[in-house]
Length: 242
Ligand code: GLP
Image 1 (tube, protein in one colour):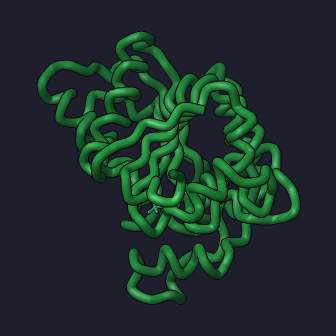
Image 2 (spheres, rainbow, N blue to C red):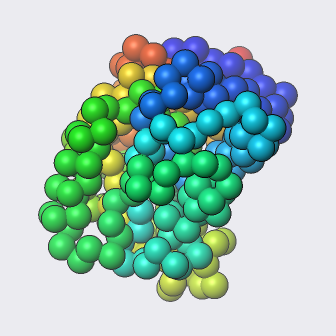
């Protein structure tokens, strides 16, 4: 586990984008595992800037996203499909046919999850998986529980996650109660993992996840067992790790 210390959010975003762009330059037809949430937005902005300068080419890149809300149509502003289009896909030369997310509008959970597992397998495997960290230690939407779920599955979101994501919706009632997410085994199969963490409010969970016990109660703690994890965190997020 490598920890890269960043000054602030901007610095964290730039350092994370550097790692992602190195991956694209080294392997132009790489498979990127992508994440949503507010934390990676700055890194996406930086990648777009470098693309505009002519330093990056996404034409052969394939992406698989971690998760999607169940029941939100693609056009919904809070769907992760919409998020990815807004922050990255519409701004770079990626082939839309090579960008994948779980199908949130498939009501049959088993079908949606099996389809997504097949899509991920067909990409040949994720080269670099980007992850944010939920306040309760979730990665993707793998919520605290008594087991690590292996493959893509449908989750009931916890109250803390619903509350944390409420800020993006008009009211708490509008926040979906379920989501489809890649499982822990899928995430752990990525060759490299890049975790971005910012802000004082993540300091405690950052310490618990990476310096505490490995437990499904803190799903991100399993990353301690992966052999190529880089955490890029700002000083505020690292303040409890000294
Ligand atoms: C969301 C997403 C996660 C994300 C996390 C943290 O619920 N499903 O993939 O990493 O919460 O979000 P943020 O970066 O906004 O703190």
